[in-house]
Image 1 (cartoon, protein in one colour):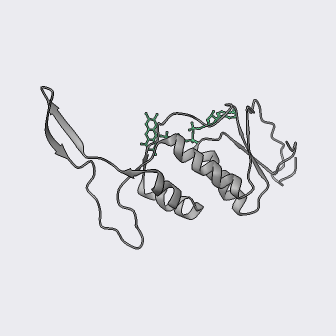
Image 2 (cartoon, helix red, strand yellow; image 1 turned 120 degrees about the vertical axis):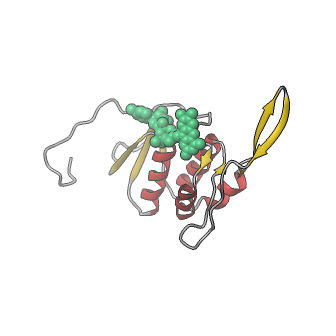
Image 3 (cartoon, protein in one colour; image 1 turned 90 degrees about the vertical axis):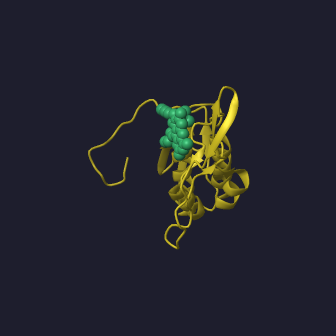
Length: 146
Ligand SMILES: Cc1cc2nc3c(=O)[nH]c(=O)nc-3n(C[C@H](O)[C@H](O)[C@H](O)COP(=O)(O)OP(=O)(O)OC[C@H]3O[C@@H](n4cnc5c(N)ncnc54)[C@H](O)[C@@H]3O)c2cc1C
């Protein structure tokens, strides 16, 4: 593992992986470090918002995200153990050129992160797992040195 990098990204969650992809595709030497031994295995963020879909399109992962997920199911209302009604979870807006995605797309977060990591590695980026940032030192100059 290289000991020098121009940019250190702390954390291989969705934000760190997305930033790593953006830097890698711009040819910036960057390293993502993650204190855990692997990607987060659970799913908090499962509802991918329309704006995130636009960003995923730009990062080159939209096809994989669409293949891995589905639209939200209907909401169900239960009473005395019986399903008595259904309702749509969202009121879809009109799609437009500026806003092509109109409702959230459901993908488990662990799968989204797998897709982002694969894209990062495809672009030559790296994640060092089992590496925790424990401190930062900042020099007084904002000249990019040090
Ligand atoms: C219950 C719940 C439901 C949610 N539902 C949704 C949803 O439906 N849709 C949605 O978009 N979002 C949802 N979210 C929010 C979403 O999960 C977060 O916005 C997202 O995980 C944030 O990503 P992140 O990469 O910024 O941070 P994180 O996912 O927290 O990742 C940070 C990473 O940094 C690592 N790290 C931390 N410190 C260090 C260190 N010092 N050195 C090295 N590594 C370090 C951690 O191990 C972790 O892997 C939900 C959140 C919760 C709690």
